[in-house]
Image (cartoon, rainbow, N blue to C red; front, side):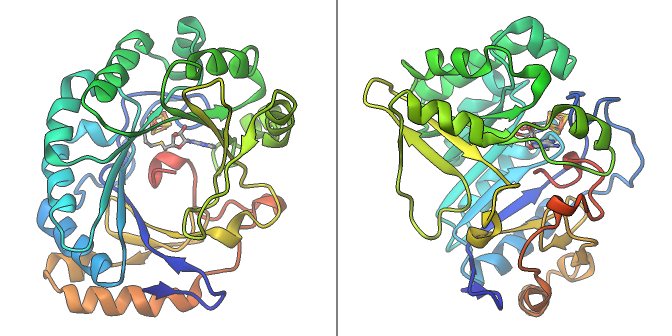
Length: 323
Ligand code: SAM
Ligand code: SF4
């Protein structure tokens, strides 16, 4: 098992497979994807070496993310190779869902266990305004298909921002009443490119928590290795509500994840200064050296991010690393 000096255990890898995205979410890539990095993303062999190394170190769960991971035409093969790696028990993907309806059958067949889809509003006009794309109905059909296929762990990610907030909680509560999915509200995080949007839009998740508790929602007790999200359930609702509040005290105490960028850099925190380059080792298919490099890097993991001091590290936007 991978540990750090603060007693945290890391059993979860978030792997970005591209930083390209076709959406232009106003809090992430408001001007769309700018092609300012080389596009030689990790290939399947390199990904296989990486996932094997993490599995040897006790990683049980891999989340495939981006940019938009479903823009890669080998995304299904990547799901399959992660799922077939000895030691990996759970494979998840985070997507904007633009081609989910087309892809979800083959994802399920490849062994996908968990699906996160980003939907910030259930109002089609607002959704289009936020993302630049009029695809809400199609995305919701993709989710219905995932439910039909029996994918049990389905989460919707909704960023909390003042300008999206009108009716957001009310609409999602009405939706989870009859949908067995978890809607997770994520506090807007500041990024290098997003300082002004952050200043104008940041909203604490505590206001949502207070509303949920007042309406009879109960906080679910979660295991030690479950990560920093808080979850709530209600006897009258099929689905659940979650809250991710990175600005709250002790958020980083339950950190259980490490990140690797699409170019093969290990990031010890979403808001770290720089990544540790594993590319050469991956390219040489050197699992043992990759294991050693990851283990050696752990000594440098900080106790917490410094978002409270408005230090965003090298992260200009979350499409770089996948959130
Ligand atoms: N394109 C995919 C998607 O949107 O689901 C995967 C990558 S996206 C960067 C991963 C998650 O990060 C999404 O749920 C998105 O809403 C969230 N995100 C992006 N920028 C954010 C920010 N500044 N603060 C909080 N969450 C953010
Ligand atoms: Fe693309 Fe996801 Fe960022 Fe939206 S949040 S711009 S879908 S990477």
